[in-house]
Image 1 (tube, helix red, strand yellow):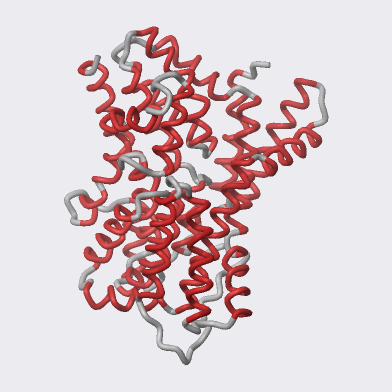
Image 2 (tube, rainbow, N blue to C red; image 1 turned 90 degrees about the horizontal axis):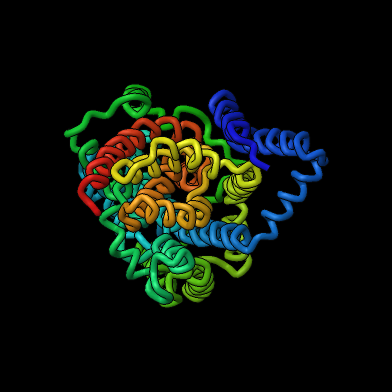
Length: 457
């Protein structure tokens, strides 16, 4: 059944409680229960049974299993690299060459551009490897997290090939925007229209070099870090902090212990047609054997580190799984359809792209979903654009931009949670401090879509 504006209640509950309680999991859980209570009341069903069924559905979904394995194995790989001493050796090497705060921030930005295959890989690797370097210059963790998060998902939709472009390319084929087998090549034609992606990435250096001034919570974080040396605003709430002690203190660590696993990870991911799961499986297996052969650690130490690294991702994964349950609630209540229907009276050919961008951005921020939004919205937007005679690729680009904005602006999106995990920054501190900067990129992108709506036919 259609729930109309009532569909906005569950995500509103989540956002209000998250800001008030400065945590993510509990507000998500309560928001989901509220949503299923509303559904149960209107459909005369047991709300708790509905919630449990939804949770079982999410946990049994192949996409959820993929996310759990990928994130967990990334945690295992990071744990191995940290305990080998290679990550810290890389930090020491970089510190000798980076002389300024601006250099450290540009280093984080540049590494984010280099690791473009997957946003999870980028967020976890860049945050982990740059922490020590930015800490040395008393750069607050919130600022590092902003650069990591604002580079990871946006850059993945701008580069020609990544897990994002391949996924979206498949949707373009199933939505009949692209012929069979030409989804990726069609996406390449759409890249100029993914405005939020390149706007958000390109404004980062403007803040770093002072062309645009830091403001809001990030400026306050700067003052706090410089005056008190306190790099975080509040405690990093993780239930399973990763062990960072060296497995073999007697063995001198080398940069190659960090670089070689990363190279193998990138190469394996590319070899398996940008399959992040196969790539990280190969990388973990290689790193385990490599460290064992060169005696970085014993078999038992390596095994414990592998499981310890996986375990360090459990809290982040719990938040992600609960956000998927929230998405299921929103789908059942017809949130996407309601927002698009509410915007329909204001639609015309010229303003269609910006209205699609703005309305779907609201959905992405409230649901914390990007890929799920694409799967639902693109098939709806394509006939809408054709009906109004508006450029289909331009409007699909607006959908992609909306999903990326949500990844940056949502307080409990996977990008926000994983960035907070890798930078060891409270995810609410990170999300709230980054939000005004994401809104700047959103506003610029909206203006660009207004212009493109008149220019592109």
